[in-house]
Image (cartoon, rainbow, N blue to C red; front, side):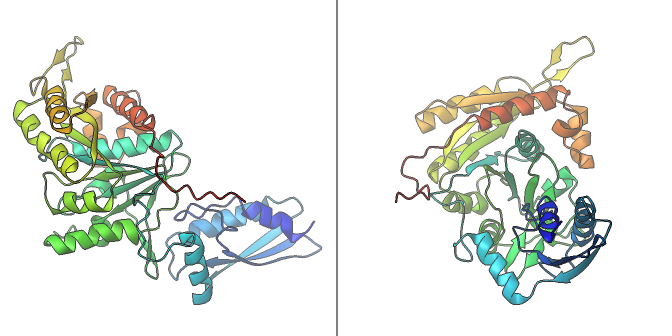
Length: 375
């Protein structure tokens, strides 16, 4: 047996933050093996104090010990040199320059901006659960919490990890749902003790730009963005930075909420985004006898869709109606998304059905650069 068998075993160990094999990231250093089957492996972390260090060491040791012919093994943890780190960043960027927006006009990632006209309609809970549901379907998903003043996505997903900085590159925490995990970034991950954010327009734009350009997202199938309520600076900045995005509007059945929600979709139209559809949340409360009690009225979702269709000059669908759910609310408070922890709940089923409709929405390839060449 040679050290190549050990490297083959280590190729199955995935870096928790970068979501790529250690061998592909050049994180495996010297590998030695004695005739008696004693293996020794050096693992090179990206930065000092890497939060995933213990997990990487444990999984690497288990992988080496699983290699046929290895009787015992030791793992030595070191840190990459600056030259090695620069080479890694170059590899991750795949030839793109620093501060590059991977979601520009030629992106193959399907981008959705989830907005609402006002707060309190459950937009963030819906967005978080949609992202989890897409990840559960096997897609590579990223989630940006763009609600700078009212961030809540980390808590909704039970994420307490801080982003890791590899020089100027930011590695987003990963919620371990689905095959590839769910990459998440939020201003709340950079703050201590729930401190408020008091920023004006230029700083808001810079923060959103960093979330898109400085964060290592890798290859994503979907990027969901949780917008702040209303039609302010962040929505406009995202409209400029995400030219291929489609808007999803969340509202409640209440007529007053529907009138305000229309503005959220209209802003997207003004900045070049099409409206993918409308989600009506808190549509009804199921009674013990099975009947539906429409606590907030009825028809709000369809009203928003009809109004946006007139503005857009194209049909706008109601993607689904989500009933009031106690376990949805409890799961959001506890960091346990209902689609993952209570998939049989009526609200979870409704959200999963909406996620399937999003997954079925294919990206248009006309005019896009596919990175292919003909020799």
